[in-house]
Amino acid sequence: MRRRDEGGTVTTLADVAAHAGVSKSTASRALSRPDLVAPETVVRVRAAAAALGFIPNRAASHLARGRSGIVALVVPTLDNAFFTPIIAGAQERARESDLQLTVAVHRLDDADGLDELERLARQVDGCILVAPRGPDDIVRAAGAFGPTVLVDREIEGMTSIVADTASAFAELATRLAEAGHRGIVYLGGPEGSWQDRQRSAAIDAAVGERVELTALGPFPATFAAGVATADAVIGSGATAVVPYATSIGLGLVFALRARGVASPGEIVVSAERLVAEAIGADDVPAIDVDGDELGREAMAALLPMLVAPPSAPTRRRLDVSVHWPAAQAAENALSPR
Image 1 (cartoon, rainbow, N blue to C red):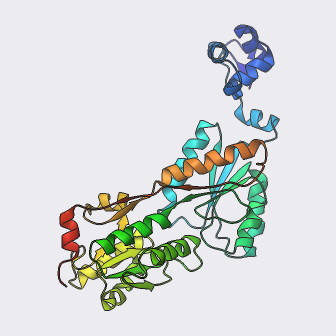
Image 2 (tube, rainbow, N blue to C red; image 1 turned 135 degrees about the vertical axis):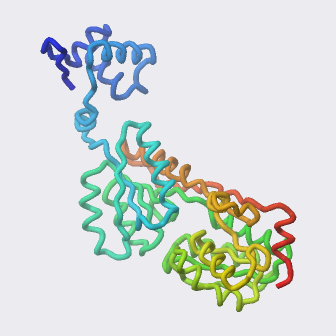
């Protein structure tokens, strides 16, 4: 970008290069791709730019490379708080690479949403696609519009980053069974959810033959849905509940307490650790999903795809830890009903 000083003189990239004692191409790389230039040269060029009042035009730099400098993160809704840290992590990593992140909402439940998503794909360099629901062929078609990383779902032929909540749910259920719970309820997530299928199968494999396992659902990931499950949970006779989403669990706990059922105490309901800590519920089992890391890693996987297509799609699963309450809380969870 050219800048005029107070005397009206135009400062150009060539001026910066001459001031720093390097070629114009080296000055350009030092300002736009410092990873390709010796650190001492980057320092010298940046000092020259600052001294001359020169500010690089990043948009022009991206366009010169045939790119917009913008990447999109597509979510099915803005109502689910699970997506918030994913967006934050992706944005932080994009900023570190001099990219702008834009967020768009597309459900991808059917082919009707593909035209709109294709228009978006034409305006950005690549997409991070959060599509927990929808047919595989529709999501795969969406990923074919350009460089794409799929988040929290795996589909053959697509690069993906997944938080391994299924393994964490299995560990939760196992530890609940080991703590003496003989009846466990799994409150399922939205119909068609890939993660819901993974979590349900993992819990069944872990404790299906050891306890009386009741699966209820599907349910939307909302507080209201959790409230509506209370009678069925009480009727099951279970002493432990593993909900698909903390929002469902919070609704259930609210409804249980309104009915005079202690939770934790008579019925223990698991949660996500950040939410549990925020409301002071450190006495319940919880999983610790790092949504920020999920977003950062998704963006990190996308970046090399913006330069060249990968030789083959990759899959990565991020570990999800389980927080188990103190022994006293476990004893309280098994108090007589």
